Length: 53
Image (cartoon, rainbow, N blue to C red; front, side, top):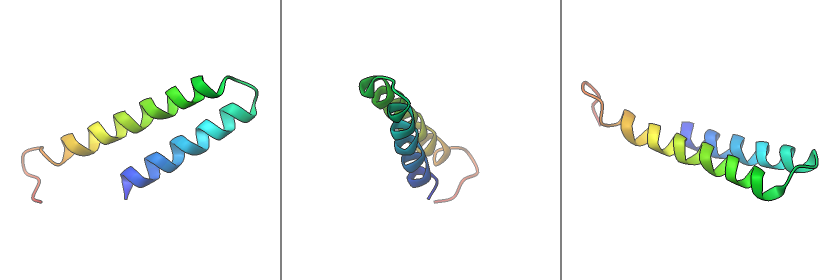
């Protein structure tokens, strides 16, 4: 659920930054970076000691 919220938040941020007049490509790169970090955190959290899957 957290990963879905991260993706949705990044896409909303992309639209907001783009609508403010900044480059759409720059906003897309920022959103992509947020999604990659969120995915990496999600993958790392599942491998922490003491976590049961």
